[in-house]
Image (cartoon, rainbow, N blue to C red):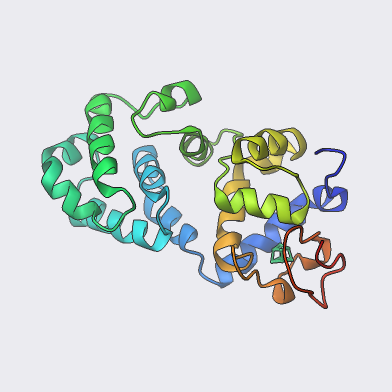
Length: 232
Ligand code: SF4
């Protein structure tokens, strides 16, 4: 893992993240729009993050636009007052929307008179909130140095050659060890935005990728004339 890491990429992590951010802003990454819609409250960040699990960001964004400004349900009490049926209709289209409706109502009941927890342990006690969601909320809502590893972060970290891991939990542990602290907090957002626009799951756009000269392209098939390391 650490011994196999792409050291050149690690040494230029600040530059890599800024190039990723610039490119995904140019390509209008859905996660950046989602962030703009939820940035004003930890509760909204929590709701968006839990709804976005196994759901395209485009779909989640539509649901939160129906929920927050549409239904004006931007607090636990207001969401509780919608009731299960109405909330299910609002969340329709989101992956596992029935289960998420149930979990969201249970979370709202728990948080009716409380703030969103700002600890991993506190967040993990909420129904339907797993480690990935909790870490993303801690970083985005509370500025903590945590890395939420979803499919994008896992895939890109391995392609770049930063880690060599099979499971997201292993990727999280490895990244926390090797990524300089000052970049940890923004890593999830920048990798996710880049994974939605450039380093796509099936057909990564390696030719126009702004960091292609630093990428090992592990597991990517097909040659790229521009990438220094080629496919491995
Ligand atoms: S060169 Fe290709 S595999 Fe590497 S980060 Fe860029 S798009 Fe992804």
